[in-house]
Figure: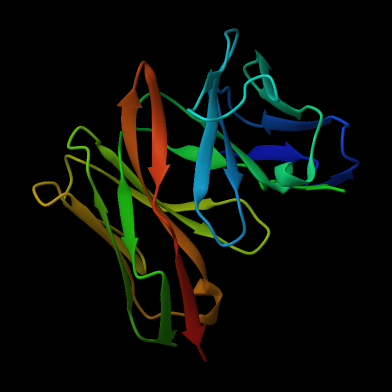
Length: 116
Length: 114
């Protein structure tokens, strides 16, 4: 299957600082990437849909000014958690779709963010 | 929007026996239903998927069935092995305001007992 690489896998930051997470599709071009958040022992909650060259579409309740998403190329999307607080600590996962509607979505390995 | 329910939340199966996980969805427009396996500290891995024009799909020990009329789909794992222990998520794909997105079930923690 297609490979999606996410970096870093773990990050610890201080409250008030910003953290950037990268998501790359290594062997295919992804016009659409997705960012999810997962709390311990819970399901994946979609945060936003990122389309290359346009603004991301955020799900209801997700602060777009806090979670900045940039999809500058067909192989790279970034999520920046700005002014992080302990409640932002979570597992963040990106995914990319190979093709159009109803095609496989492949996931990155996730980023464990801890805000202290 | 789409709502996906998944049962059971935990499942323990003796090695070699079969495991079945069931999901229901609410949006009749959904037409793509993947299953993911997630190991601790890792991202979900696609293990099998099915589209709405197919009733059943099989890949070695894994099979998925879909009943569009009843809006439910199931994952079947036969001859279970210890490495099958993980959390499994079902999902349904819906088209929402020009974007396609996956709605996930709540997950099933499968434990294979040696």
